[in-house]
Image (cartoon, rainbow, N blue to C red; front, top):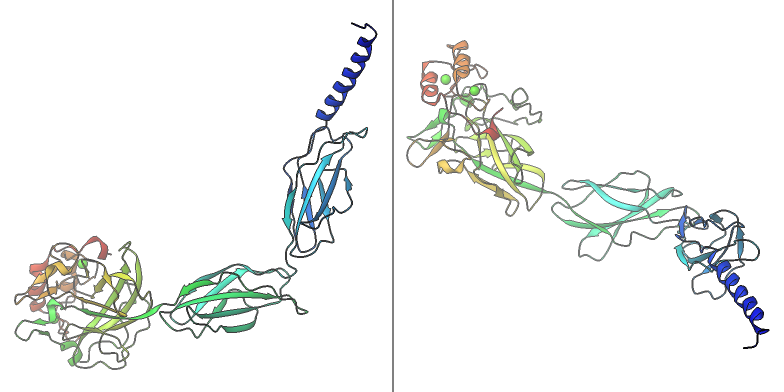
Length: 432
Ligand SMILES: [Ca+2]
Ligand SMILES: [Ca+2]
């Protein structure tokens, strides 16, 4: 071997080692990201490289635009870039400057897209919906001074426009009940600068008006010889025109007032619709007039049931009927709305009511609500007797406690109605 060549080889190897070690000593920046993005500017950030003693070199460009814009020297791990084009996708990448002309490789690109000068309002949603209106809300576009809303029945072609909307939430009115709609929104940022409309319109369904046609018989008024109830209270003009459940234990504050009380009205009743998912949850309540036929009707002259606004047209509900001195009942199952009607008959079988012996068999395949709960708490016991005793011998009164046969007087005949029912307990769902 030629001994003169050995020192030269050492020099070459040393130089190579130096090159390799200096390349490894300058860390490539990582975790590139973008923050505070708007239409024309963005803050570009990345993780600090420990050995970037002389900062970083950054370059960016519009995606697919060919050449990079001039490289920028940056002395921290972020850079605020301005003068960008709206709604444009850019890419940027960074390299560390470890001093002495020792640079890392570039990081590889990170993409970001600038916003519109007038962004589409985000998160358009329906806060609440009724049978003819819906409350809409959205995340405001910061520089918008008004909005335009378009809506249409799902499946139809032409949109209706509401322009110059200033309120948020905004109530969309004039809708058709029990109908699916789609709705979209656009921001107006002034000077002819409008956002796009919501790309995927949101869909909602208006609620329905449902006719609730429920039949019950009250034991105290039922006459087995006729198959109807008597209407002694109405005949004696004792029934108040205003619904009577606006007090404990019902505390129902509805404004029902009977336009006129015909002679075939037995008394006021309170009807509750409860959730099919959780029958403890009251969805809607309404006071109605019980007729001698057992049908419950509206105060406003509707004669074939009780009208409930704002129900889901395809809903299922438990039905509760309450009376001021009879034991309340709940339907044994939930009942489906069919063709905007909810129909239920508590008079045909004991099993129509939830629980055991909640309806009383009076013969002829007729079942009635037990009389005797004069405090309306869902239990017939001595406290109801005490109410009867307190008001005993009062005549021609609607409010006297213990008028269990609903003739306006509190007499021994009422006690005779009460006595067989003492100790009947309503199901937990209807007790107060
Ligand atoms: Ca009671
Ligand atoms: Ca009586």
